Image 1 (tube, rainbow, N blue to C red):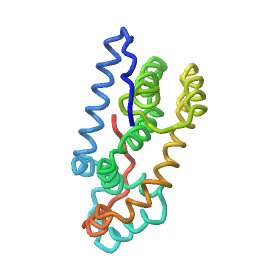
Image 2 (cartoon, rainbow, N blue to C red):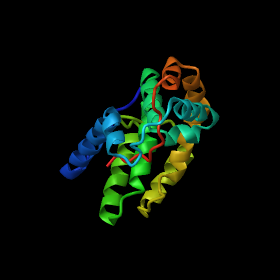
Image 3 (cartoon, helix red, strand yellow):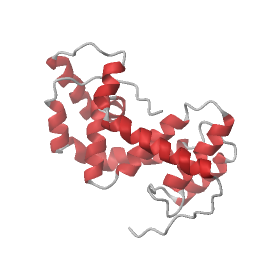
Amino acid sequence: MCREPADTNCSCPEWAKDLQLSIGTLIHKLEAGHNLLATSLYRKKANSRSSKKEAMRITDSFSQLLSSKDGLLAFSKFLKTEFSEENLEFWMACEEYRKIHSDNKLRTRAQTIYQEFLQSGAPREVNIDHHTREFTLQQMAIASKNCFDAAQEHTRVLMEKDSYPRFIKSPLYKELLHKPSVRKLKLSFR
């Protein structure tokens, strides 16, 4: 897909710094999955039967996959092999966006997310229709915690219907089935 360079008329150095920090934090936390598990409330060692059962639940529901730490990490790795990791990264950025409490940070982060994932020609542009993109832009004027809901849902449906079935058939999923511990964990990428 041919992409045009993003508009760089932003005069706010904070934006670039915030974006760099957010992306660095996200990458670090995805790669440091074992550290997140060690500090979580779910320290108990799961027996192999319940671990396999948890991995099997991922087959039943895409929502189960999104709530499984190990499943999410494996799915992210799979998406990278298909060069479509921006969909999951956008979904996770939206999840984190909802956790922001400051109105100023909401506005700043909304602009960052829009310019990174939704703006035409964005560096990691997700595939959403024009109407959803325009609706999201209108919602951003309010800067509510739900301004990305339509675009996030659109992306989630695309992953569920397109990438998820291929992931379930992939060697990465089979590897996840044989992993000794699979735990459910609420993700936090701050």
